[in-house]
Image 1 (cartoon, one colour):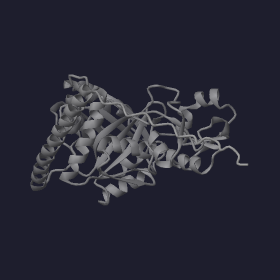
Image 2: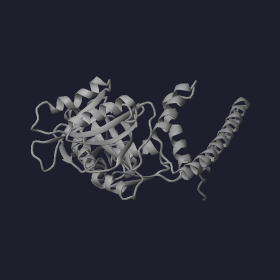
Image 3: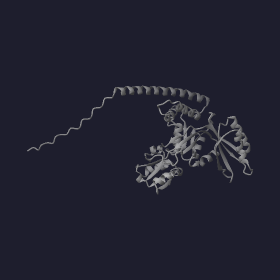
Image 4: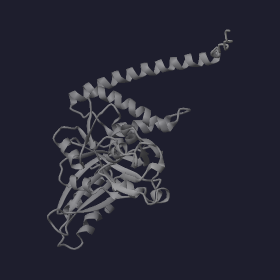
Length: 383
């Protein structure tokens, strides 16, 4: 006797695709038309930049002009009538500038590596993804690569609002003939990164000493008793986390992307104003832009009383504002110091020139490190 067969179950029919409302189709066609207009405008911009590049080559002018790019981005953000968000204008146009600048000539930029460090973030913020960004092992190597022509420009950290000055950078300036061409202000946002994305797996937290210090309170509250491991860079910490699921790294979003990590927690820095200042170094001095800084380093005679007072007095007399004063030991001369000064204005401005000339008369030696465009508002690194 044949057994009754089970009825065959038919797969459920897929729902019919909903018809696109004609109003939506019409809006999309208008967006497509605008996109083609944007593409045509970008190509016209590229053709004009190509002509600029040819003219610069004939005149022997540098490809990178920090003041021009800063002013352009600020003006576009200021003139934006919306609804496109003004905060996105610098990022969008920064990439456009980077892409079309490459038509003038590829800019080779050395930075403190490896890839994924905040120096990498700063270099990419300043020069965009279309530049040739080259990681090197030390701050001294950044200077060496630019001095020997292996890079056109370099990006080096010089100070942080939480941890203070980067002494290796100041020491390198004292022994270099390079000039400062610009500055980058980067809002440092630290992220906790791991391979698994599970906080309960974290037994150690790795990063550079500065990052560990900048996140100390958060770590004490959220990962008490967890071992801290110091590394040479935030990227090296990210590499450790990629190799060991029990290690979490403190680093940037770029480090997470580079090493395939998950962001466990975002913005774990203790201070919301945590910002690092980077300097762009090169071989060609930029001209005045109307909003500049000048950096200079002096030595004074230690056996003369009042020399530091006489060194600083001319800046007050000529109405030149000092924005920073730092000191570093003079190598080979115990208890003698280098004094690094940042002041507002370009060295070609009459008041600045007179103040520098008068200060030099009281100094034992004077070295102008550069006059350069001030940075725009800080960009965010790691967000």
